[in-house]
Amino acid sequence: MSQPTYPMFLPDESLEIRSDSENEEDLSTSSNVPSSATSLEDEGKLLTHHHVMPEDTVNPRDFVDVRRIIHKIFPQCVFSANDPRVEIAQLKGGITNMLLLVSYPNPSKDGGRDHVLVRAYGNGTSTIIDRDRELATHLHLHSHGLAPTLYARLSNALIYEYIPGKAVEYTDLSRPEIMSGVASRLAEWHHKLDKKAIESEMTRLKALEKPSEQSTSSRDIYELLEEWINVLPRETDAQKKRVEDVTNELAWIKKTISNQGGPIVVGHCDLLSGNIIVPENWTPAELKGHGKSHQKPLTGSQAAFTEENIGHVKREKMTDPAKPAVDGFAPSTLTSFIDYEYSIPTPRAFDLANHFMEWQGFDCVVELIPEPSTSNPVMRTWAAQYLESLAYFEGKSEPTKVTEQAVDSLITEIATWWGMPGFYWGIWAIIQATISEIDFDYAEYAEKRLSEYYKWKKGREAK
Image (cartoon, rainbow, N blue to C red; front, side):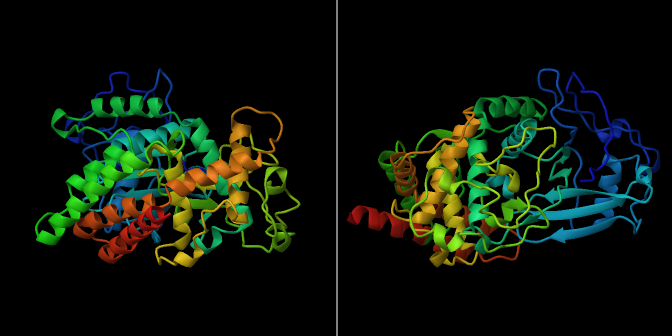
């Protein structure tokens, strides 16, 4: 894997932000550190080579401007804002932001090229996304080898390392090798991520902001939903009624299921297919024993990810090679997660239920969603893999054969929160319908997702 080059610099201990006007320079004569940049430090250790550039913006639709900002961040690369050797391609799939892949010549590589990603925030998304939490989570993940290197934070974008790979399709999420990789990686997230460390980094980030720009942050998914409800449109009687309804529903959720979602974890909370990355050479394969394996529930080592049951699929690390690998039964190296803007402390059941609901894709093919039943072998396989991997990351040296009761308990936990993703993304889509410039029917999507929630609640109350 070829990593982009970047300027090395020492942390600015004062964490002072200098404006561009204090030290304006032509692009061709820029120093190694952008004049408006400062770096983040945690107890004397730089977590990632990261420029904070709060006065800089990038227009993702203006490729000349994209080249300008890339040169400012990587001034040792000799090219101009109009240099055709700097290639830019828009990556498809997201419905919140615009993602660009930038490829540019690296003089030190004798004709080689470097690649970085520019993720420009969607219009108005600061209304629904805490960008300080997103950045703090990215830094925390990077410290665990779970996120790419971050190079710069602009006022409207992040610029970070490109890791070769490809996103899976939503129709791939039920494939055994993907199920196993996702379950294992998510177990690693839930064990390793520390919400207090993230909150500490958020405090540091807010200290870099002007007092007029500082805002409070939601501490968990409940507070986040309250904030979203507070910004829902209220112009018509129907909109006012919708606000009243979802406010009452959130109160019901807190009263009824808030204590049934398992431990509080730092969840990804947006684990759709487009945010799950696999090696570029991965192709869907008919796995050895695949048909036979689903004839009965799988638990323990039977649900493990091994060379015997993945056929010819090649495992490749997608994290730092210096980090310890996960071998045998906990293969989280197959998959890597991206996009952390919705990550927040949440009951574990929400993060897990949300992933399963994403099996339907944006097309809302509900037939692809697995039944959250303890008799469903797909759910049992996934739950067993998650629990085995969790045991591994908790420090157990040998594979742990989870009990039938443990698998039952986890599936029941997930089922209890099965309707919450529809409620969450339904409210989100109502807001997006009023602010987003992306070509997507958010209003229709909102109705589909909220209907999932109400259907689930009706079924629950009928039992």
